[in-house]
Length: 117
Image (cartoon, rainbow, N blue to C red):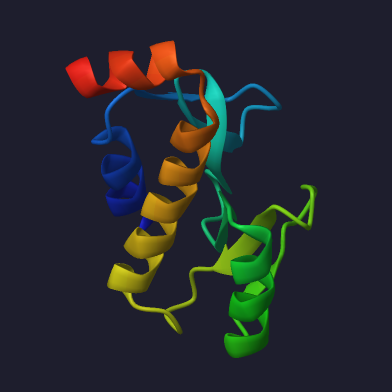
């Protein structure tokens, strides 16, 4: 997966916006204002994704390319290297998981708005 495919995949989800709130090189994807994915625009070597804490640990133990979230809460975020060790389908599955996890924590009113998009 390259950065364009990653970007398109994230933006095709309902309610998603992109921004650079931290600096000009950190691209952040949010659903209804809540962050679910981010990466370095200039150096697409990894992506940070939110993850269920128990699954986060299991993924880190199973894959060398999955690390505790860089500059993030390591209990809830993983950094996933995009060096080709993992398939695009695996990356998409984890992007979906991150998105769904954030959506599940949104207030019901915002979840309902998403279903209307």
